[in-house]
Length: 193
Image (cartoon, rainbow, N blue to C red; front, side, top):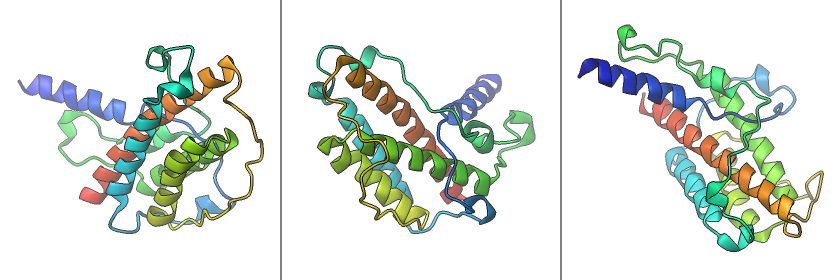
């Protein structure tokens, strides 16, 4: 029984950090300490996960193919996996898991910035009303980041027109769905301490 629990724990911890993506964060962000602020971070992270899952279930966004059958595409420029992986993840080290919370939260914030701009570039009102707004709420209320920039995204694309563009949106949303699971797990771990 104990080896099965240890294997399950090791696999869970590995899965905790497998989903990675992102770009470089704001200038100077790495020099400051990050911590989760606010008492609603877990609820906002769950809301983000729910909204991403709900958008993935909107068949009309993915007409012509079954999005559930597509592979996830995760942006891999940040080192979120290594930053958020507990350093003593084996069962023999006890129940306390050590992660560099500041670095992990920085990588998550970089991921949120990347996906926010990516989804804004799709110029889709359903995506903006649900997913982008949830990202904004999470960044603003949990990271004390001002996201009131409503200027157009750097690259504006009309991703509803072509099959390939809708297919790409599906894959990116699925990748971000995996990222939101990681965010929820990290928040649960940090806030439960």
